[in-house]
Amino acid sequence: MWFGKTPVKPRKPPAVDRVTIPVSPLEMKAVAIIIDDVGHSHPAARPFIEMDHPVALSILPDRPFSSELAFEAERRGKTVLLHLPMEPEDYPRVDPGPGAILLTQNADEIREIIGREIASLPMIAGINNHMGSKATADARVMETVLTIIAERGLFFVDSRTTPETIALDLARQLDIPSARRDVFLDNDLRPSAIDARIDELLDLAEKNGRAIGIGHANVETARALERMAVKVRERRIQWISLESLIAYADPGN
Image (tube, rainbow, N blue to C red; front, side):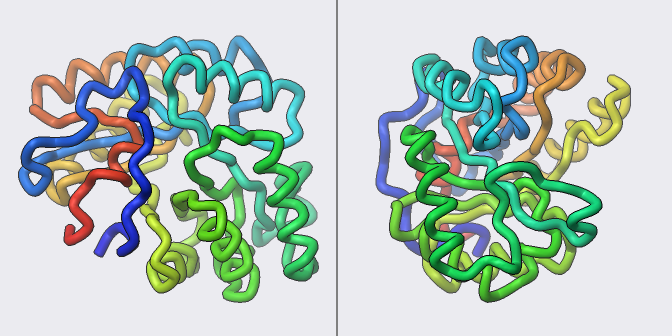
């Protein structure tokens, strides 16, 4: 099972989502896109907020423009996520930034941090991890994080920053609506490299019925997504919002 057993409570579909409830979900081939690391810059985020395609914007907490960009994205009908900073393997040499969930924190501390971050972004539909190669492999930390997500009625997307992650399996055990990242689109910002990763994403959608790609807020990725819009039409793959994919996709796949 790719998604958790408990369905997401249906919400008003994003305005830019052209396919909200597929007529035949078992036959649907669909992709969804998340844009991570939003909050540092208006110019970096604007192409995705204004894009006439259903991208989800994942907002880092406590950045200069986090709240402002999140509310703007919501007004434009985008799905908004909290991009939750979590401890990586090489912490503290690599710093996930303010508001991070660390292995040294107890359950009350984790709950206070996440509660504060959700309060600053009240429109979020779900959470995905920023970094977190160490935290997402830790059962105690992930059980605490996912319990909070369940209490809030949110969904969870495992960004899969490590092959050792237990986050998706644990989310399933807790019956939390959940999914995983299939392809990182733009680790290499050359247009040809991003296009190759998009092709990989679409191949996975055709093979598995659905796939999630994660990109980042930069101009090269925005341009590549416009090229992807042509490809999905040609390949008869439906590009829908992440929220709709999790809410309406067949849970048996």
